[in-house]
Every structure is written in C-alpha cells, then in structure tokens.
Length: 134
Image (cartoon, rainbow, N blue to C red):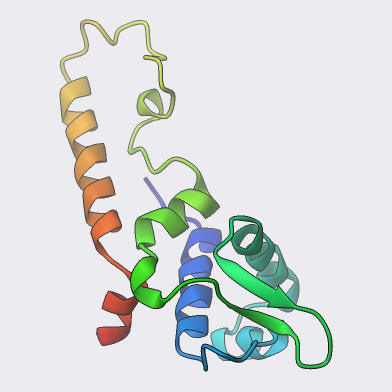
C-alpha cells in the first residue's frame, strides 16, 4: 500500500481547516498558499472532500470551505478511503469476493487479511484532533 499525494494532501487540507476559525469559511487560495499545493490540484481534492460530505462550502466574497464536523469526528482512515479507495496491501483483498483462483489454497492470504485489518484499525483510531496534538 502506498498513499498517493491526493490522500496525503487531503489529510493536510483537513488539518488546515481544523486549525481555522470553525465559524468562518476558508478560501482555496489561502489553503493552497499555506500548504504549498497548486490551486488546481487543491480544487480537485476539495471537490472530493466536499462531495463526500466532509466539508461545507459557501460561495461569494467571504466564501470558502469549513469542516462539516469537529476534528475529533474525522479519522485518517475515512479520509484516505474517500480519496484513495481501497487501502488493501495486496490487490486480491480489494474485492469483496476472492478475486484470486488460489484463494482457497493460498498460505499467505490470512497474513494479508490480518495486515489489512491492522492497517485499517490503526488508521481508524487516529483522528484529526489527535494529529493536531502532535
């Protein structure tokens, strides 16, 4: 499993918004400047987060984005799943059904399943609020 820039930047954007006034809306330009992310790429990431219901938006001069919930209500796991899709360490775990014809006899499958479970459990235990404490 390798987390792309989209997933990493999504976490940075969410953390950035968590540090702003929760009653105000923050512009894309100001986030882009602070996070050193191009506005165009940031807009694509924010669109995913907004469509996922993680952000609230407001149009106009004082418009922008804010978190839809408080920082402790977002886990790193949910943000990464929204932006990355599957976090499975091997492709045979990405489908609900066993995609590999060897799944019934694969001696390594239990190990991959356990690794996937542990990764998910850990990422789901870390909130934005936890990261802000560091």
